[in-house]
Image (cartoon, rainbow, N blue to C red; front, side, top):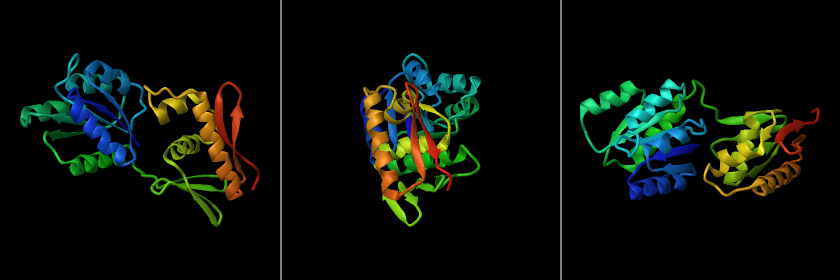
Length: 225
């Protein structure tokens, strides 16, 4: 799961990022409403954690603009003020949930999980392609009686490929979604993880493979089973 944190209190933003990273979430952080809107409009995120009182554009403005542009990513608003009026404004703007500072990390994580589940009526526990099954909770990749555990970035790359079966996924999309918009990752980083995944497919004896479309990207392919 990829989370966007938009919070101008740097220490709080870093603390939130640390908590989420410890729970294996990919995190991007920005510190004003204008940058927050730009990042959120990318559609890359599963949940947006958005402070109300921000420089340049308020959290209310950001969420209102997102909904006007048909971006449906769940938004959790944060505020230092426990006023019913603020909560009503935030929810009327299109936010999905609201928390007042200070809050417990456990409650924040629980609310993020709940918002992520709301994105679709069906919450997938696994993805399948050909003879492969990827468990989204344990990061285990299985084929027949064999299984192998994937590292975090291996898992994220394969999840994107398996969510778009037989569709070419550009390298640029993999870099942005797995490493983040501010990352210095390059094509060779993607190539390295594609190589790791191919070795694991081989270990499993799978009929599936990862095809390269030169100068574009990658797609899953399969022999007849």
